[in-house]
Image (tube, rainbow, N blue to C red; front, side):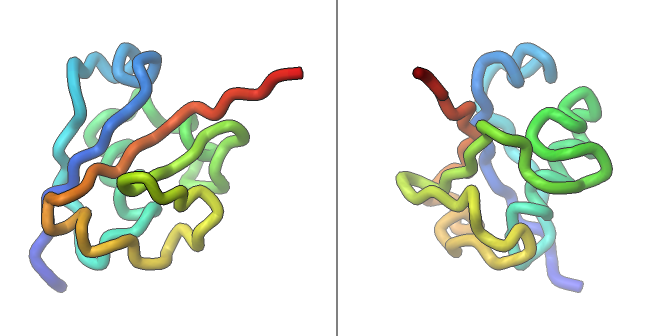
Length: 103
């Protein structure tokens, strides 16, 4: 097993409030860094976030929740597929965004 890397995660205000966080959070994540490994680490460190970004039990992404690395949308990527190395190199942030719907 490889050494964990530190990944920065930026959450929307309502999830920061729920998890009692002021700013982005830094998490140790096992390489390769994937959406699943980030969310597993985030929910492990902040259990109040379970079920807010994906279905309970590590399931599918919830509707209207998006995942970005820098400007690139990874919301529909395989949750076990590797994310860009720039995350592990601390050059970019994994952002969780609440998508807007209107009509």
